[in-house]
Length: 356
Ligand code: TRP
Image (tube, rainbow, N blue to C red):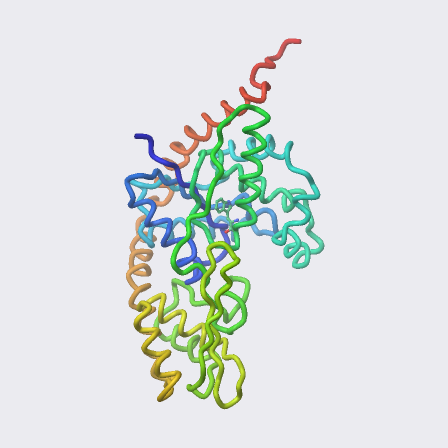
């Protein structure tokens, strides 16, 4: 039996937070430990060049992502771990792919538009090409599943479109990659607005935070009187929908989004039953947020503490990460090289040779 291939990657920016942990990292570990799959996990260091960057920071950050990968339980014996830039086949395939993608399609992507707003001085070809390179990252391993956050769905759609076009134009059978969903799809921001995000200070709990820091961050989450009504909204029209809840404070009649963030975290760390317990209190005797926050801080810290310890241990072994990367890149290049050769053959450019 041939194993299905998995690819995922994280951009080399800053440290991981609970949003990345539930949205992607847990899924990456689960797939690695499933014998039906062969897993490739990279650090997207080339994608880090699509927005203004600093080489020294990039060096530190990409090293740090590998340390995080190892700390959360990715095992170089089971998963191929590498830097994207060490497998130049990604770039070559991205170039071939770009021949079937229209500029207009890329310009209309919400992720592109956001970056244009954020860095109006930096609207480059690399930025426009971001999703094409991502499609190449995935398809160069002919990966079928991609454990990644829900925000990446538009990019996966591009990868599927490219696979379809290449298959029909060149008689290939590239897979149309699907997203692998994990339970904590959407980890809300501590501010109560939007989701946890690296680019929003105060929105996230980092995997490296200590207990005091977590307590301080949770203390700032806006709450309410502790009593109110809960409304459940189900948007069944959306594929893969999750029920959304609104917590309406009984004194102000306003929605408490901070309370939603706290309840979601309770469920992610302690399970549904615990959340239901707090929700019952919300609708009857009232919730004491001071207690809930202290308890939640401890539960979160207990889960991430072993990850922090492991990371510290990894960072005390000089050269270990370099070895992991070097052997990972070698394995990755073998697979990637086969795909690129196959694509060049199918397109007919491999046969051009040097003569007329
Ligand atoms: N775009 C992804 C993100 O921002 C990172 C990424 C790059 C990626 N290439 C990938 C994720 C390939 C999955 C597969 O999170």
